Length: 220
Image (cartoon, rainbow, N blue to C red; front, top):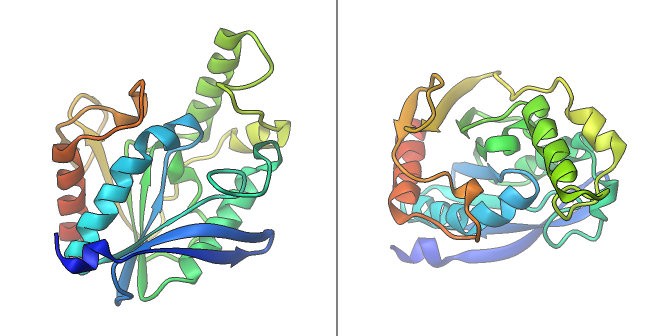
């Protein structure tokens, strides 16, 4: 990869509730991809893969950013205090603080957090509805037999906020799915569902295909 791909910066963005960490890849440009990871444990399983996607985009001259949402990653906000409304406010603020036109790249439940972002386009991988995310969380709690959701302590406000929510369809939109998914999509990609992996990891072929599709869609 080119030297631009190695320009990783750990920055922060400000939002109404405070300040959160944001990884920046490449030099500031006239367009920036802002990544919304899947939610909860799926974010941990896919983070390394999307960091690689961001590096690949930077190598092609497309800046990229990966913000932590409030209550996730290195955030000082407890996970139990997180809400979908706060995530949307924070993600929109992160998008407003990068250079150039913003293109959202979101995976799974991450496609629920960009509704308030001012974006030139949205690229979704296997997007989920809020009801689908909520069902999976309730199943996790039932399987675990406790009050947590797969190790996460979540508020009723967050669960209630997910109900009935759908990914944003405003503006330029591209929906991509894995070739194992029978639902309609603009394109199907070969590769494993990284969000289902037992351990965090990646698939170089899938990550290269994602970066190539995003770059082509943007017009790089």
